[in-house]
Length: 488
Image (cartoon, rainbow, N blue to C red; front, top):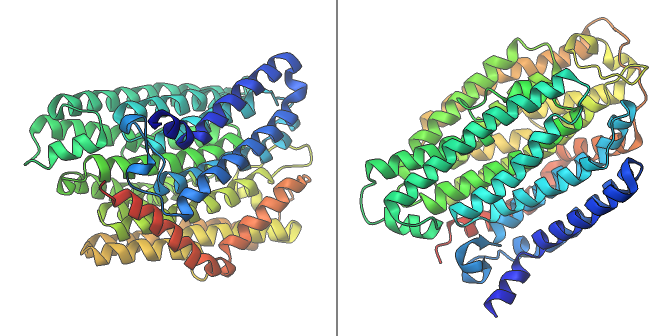
C-alpha cells in the first residue's frame, strides 16, 4: 500500500518520464520535421502535470500523507507551488521557441524533449526531502540545461555559453556534493528530517558548518546569487533567446525553491548559522546586480544583471527565516517569473527586417514611434522590474521588505530599499532610449502571433490589474509556506 501511495504521489514525474521516452522515439523515427508537433505534445503534457500538482497547493497538502518512498520525496503544497511556476516557464519556452529557431533554420526535435526532461529534473528537485534525491534532480536538470545553452551549434556565442555553463556548473555540483558528504559525515543521515533532528541536539560542529556552507554555495550558483553569479551574463547573452527565457524562469524558480527547502527543512534547527550567509549573498547580489547593469549595452546582459539583482531581493525573504518571509519570497518569485516571461518575449520580438535579433539597447532608439505597442509593453516590464508603483513588481518588493521589518531585519530592508533606487537607473535608461532618443528604425521585423498574445497577457498581469490577484496569490503562497514550515 505504501508503494502504491508513493507511485500516486509522483504521478507528474511519471507522466513526464513516460511522455519524454515516447516522444524521444517519435523524434528518432520522424526526425526534425516533427519538432513542432512534439513541442505541442510537450506543452500538453506540462499542462496536465500542472493540473496534477494544483490540488495539493489549493488543498494546502502537508504532513506524512505527502511523503513518498520512505522520506525521499515530498508532494506537499510547497513543491506544488514551485512546480506550477516551473511548468509555466517551460511551457512558455516551448511556445516561443519554434518561431525563433525557424528563422535561423535550427529547430530540432530534441529541443522540446530537453526542456521536458529538464522540467522532470526540476520537479524532483523541489520535491526532494533527501540529499540524494536533491542531487539526482539537480543533475537531471543541469545535463539538459548544458545542452540547451549550446543548442545553436553554428553560433560561437552559444557554444561558448554552453561550455562556460558546463565547466562552472560542474564545479558547483562538485562543491555541493562535497558539502552533502560532509553533512552526512557529521549528522549520520542524508534525510532533511534527520539532519534537522541531528542539528537540534546542540550547537553545530565545525564539520557540519562547513558542510552547510558548501551546500548553500552550490545552490547559490544555481540561483545565480553573488558571488557565484559569474556565469549568468555570458550564458544569458550567448544562449539562444528562448533558452535564456527558460533559464530566467523555470530553473530559477526551481533552484530558489530548493534553496528554501534545504535551508528551512534540513538546516532549520540552526537558522542563526545560515541566516548570515543568506544576508551576505542577498546584499552582494543586490549591489552587484544594480551596479553591474549600469554599463551594459546589450539588453540580454542587462536582464542577466537584473536577474542577479532580483534574486538578492528574494533572498531577503529567506533571510527572515519566518513563515511570513517564505510566503513573501514565493509571492515575489511568482511575480518575477511573469516579469521575466514578459521581458524575454519582448526581446524575442526585437528583430530587424531579415529576422535577425536586435539586442543592442542603442538600437531601440525611437521604438515608441515605430512600434508603440511593443515599446509600451517593454516599458511596463522595466518599470515593474524597478519596483515602481502602481505596477505589480512593486508589490513583490513591498511584501519582502515588510516581512524583513517584521523579522527585525530593519537594516537589511533599508539597504534593499536604497539599492532599489540605484537599480531603477538602468531600467529607466531603456525607457529613455525608446521614448526620447532619435529613431533608428532597426526593429522592423514582424512578430509571431504567439509572442504578441503571451506579451499582452503577461503585461496585463504586471499592470495595476494584477493587484486584483493579490488575495488569491497570498493564499496560495501562504499554503506553500505553511507546508514548508510544517514539522511532521
